Amino acid sequence: MRRLAGTVCALLLAACGSGEQASTPAPATVANGPVAAATSRPADTAPAGMARYDGYGDLRFGIDEKAFADAWQGDLLRLGPPGQACFCQAPRWVKTPSDFAFMFEGGRFVRYDVGTLKETAPGGGKVGMRAEQIRTLYGARASETPHKYVAGGRVLRVTAPQGVGVLVFETDARGRVTRWRAGMPPQVDYVEGCG
Image (cartoon, rainbow, N blue to C red; front, side):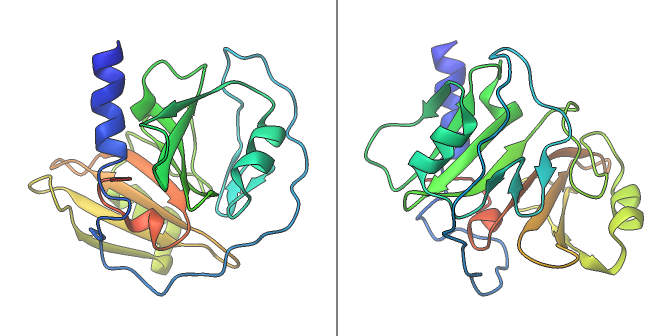
């Protein structure tokens, strides 16, 4: 299990600070305001319907690590060695870290990654959908580029209808969404995660 977690962590952490990014717009301003406390939840279950363009549930992009931990009110497993500027944390209920993780950079919450059918992206996108369905759901807000590592795969980048945040959907060569993420530029565009 440690070997699997280490491998997943390496993949999630591979690009923070390496400069490897997909085409990236100018960084957006990150909010520093207070965050409302998240609703308490059993440690072994995932909350439903919490994905947002500007964060996850009551957790908004830009809050610091302490405010995030206070609002989350649950155990988090740090993925990667201490002392790194960019790292991920996964809730204890996550069986495989690649299924769901929160990214922090410079002490701030900046992104979350989803690789499971259990979560639905803002606007309705999900793992398993076809690229055509994603384009239909998000319309002109969705741009598409070839995947950096998956031959025939695509990356669909969706801007928020208003406000802060970006969604990124990755597909396999058959055009099926294999994972998605939400976050702030430039971190949402890091292809390999943190590094």
